[in-house]
Amino acid sequence: MGRPLGSLVVALVFATAACARPEDPPASAAYRAETPSVGQTAAAAEPSRPRIVFLGDSLTAGLGLPRAQSVPSLIQARLDTSGYSYEVVNAGVSGDTSAGGLRRLDWALDGDVDVLVVELGANDGLRGLPVAQMKDNLDRIISRAKDRRIAVILTGMEAPPNYGPVYTSEFRQVFQDLAEQHDVTFVPFFLEGVAGIPQLNNTDGIHPNAAGAKIIEQTIWRALEPMLERRATETQRHGGKPS
Image 1 (cartoon, rainbow, N blue to C red):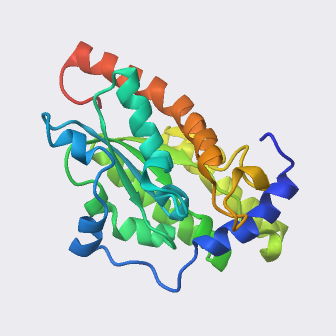
Image 2 (cartoon, rainbow, N blue to C red):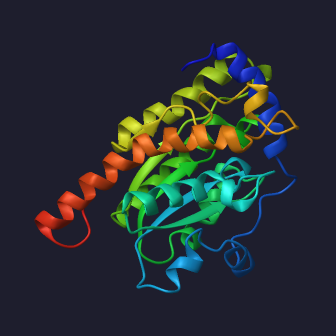
């Protein structure tokens, strides 16, 4: 990581607090209707494209930003200008925990999903939820995606320090362990280079502003583009969706 860990976790005390809401949203048709794909307008005028789904909390949703400046929207723009025919779905819900993400998973994976980007855990850390519970939820999300032959990018998060060093260490280790266990692409810290830097966050000092979102987009793109290249090669070689 580019910044000292101490400054990052202190920043995340506030970051996760702002992501939190009293209850997780239900996995319902109402949720589904409120989360159109980023590329929905463009997709209406052309044949259906495979999807890249971002499953996360307010950091994915782009709280405090116009929709066009959220990380998923920036990834959609990058895909379009780079000649990749994908439709990005922003399935970010403020306040979501790993359990909430798991409950919404079937809705999120509706349609021809090729890649799932998992950005969850910040609210688990804020609430001091058991690390084993978070690990089980994320494990089930990854496993179910892989069962559908969907490639996964797992992004890591830091827990606030107020639950003690053992909790924060175990929390951090969950993401690395799951990435190794499932052999998925791993981004160690979703907010790398952004957390704790005032000029890269909104006035709440918490959620990335437009400049911060662009840095995160670059981080995600470095993980995503090689994956898309590999999957395109496998599809051409074997035909159909890569295993």
